[in-house]
Image (cartoon, rainbow, N blue to C red; front, side, top):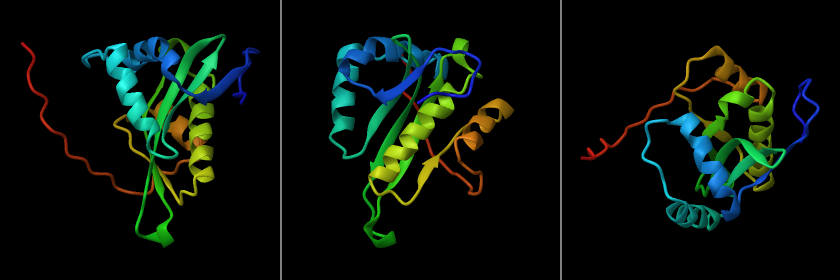
Length: 160
């Protein structure tokens, strides 16, 4: 899948596997720089668990063998809408040095296409960002801002 850009290099979007984790984990630092780092071993356990949920996966945009963008798609079973599942996209990030080239949009569109392939009737994405550029990426990938989102977070335990 090729993003719109004057950059002639080809972005390839695919599902992540265990071998991608050493390149994927540092990319998450651009999303949440203050998070506790996850070890590759622990990440393998989490990726395996995600893979056991039909249709759910980490999607990665790869440029010259480097992961430059990612998002996670979770497909959730449903008891309404005739049993059609719905999907949630989370952990959307493009490496800071690769932004503005369409890589995030291409990765999001790949994940949305996978959700449709799994029979989802909708795909949801929440963001805490108010940056015009970030919201523009979501709109350019086909998302519309038409609902009110709520969340509740558990207070993280203090380390040290």
